[in-house]
Image 1 (cartoon, rainbow, N blue to C red):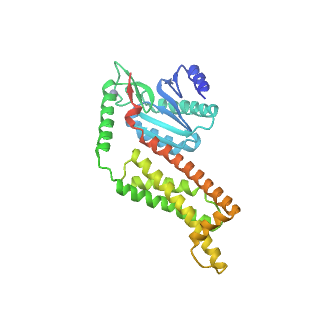
Image 2 (image 1 turned 180 degrees about the vertical axis):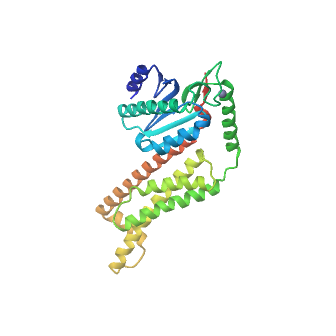
Image 3 (image 1 turned 30 degrees about the horizontal axis):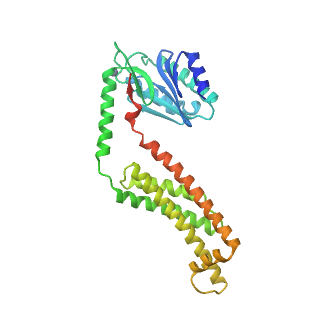
Length: 308
Ligand SMILES: [Zn+2]
């Protein structure tokens, strides 16, 4: 993908590095950035009194036409977001957005000079990095935003962390995943996706119940999901054995019978171990997907900001 971005940037006279290209298009400061599966086409402009006109044109009149997933605004402009399947297709789409949107802003009278943060003219523009892309702005406007972001982040990290509440949330979320597992098991499926459901719900409820997103959250959510799904696996199997015993008028402990069957019957042993390994595999996949999401959310906004 990098080669295609570099070619695209060269054709437009954009600066380019890694998976981003930044420069002037139609006189406006713009950028294109790729983030694993997502493309961000940025317009670093202060819309001022045209804010409502431009945003409603973009999100109501043209959203379908442009096939964009979302538009986000920031104090330094706005971004069109879409899923980037292929580099070629995404760059074509980005090019179309750049052309149509800058044309529209020109026609609407949005000035292309001026600081993206405040809109006032720039005598000594400074090169800054915000939202991981580069553009020119007032030094002090950037500093002000950076200070606000850093203050909000340090207030958040100083706020109390409710581990116990978070743990309770994770427990409820993981149990919901276990319930899905048990229901699917009962109708004869080994429920591969239920661990992912459990992991995602555990993560969401951990935060909802007041736990902060940090390393402890990753450990708690991962451990709770893993342990509960594995316990559920054994409980489901033992309940199944209990049913079989009742049907065959056998009495005694289903748990003992389950482990005895594993010891005595090679076929049962193979089947149970196979199912257990599949369950562990899918639980690990679910947990990894979840951890990637949590780590991504942990990235601080201030880490996407830099001054040159
Ligand atoms: Zn400014």
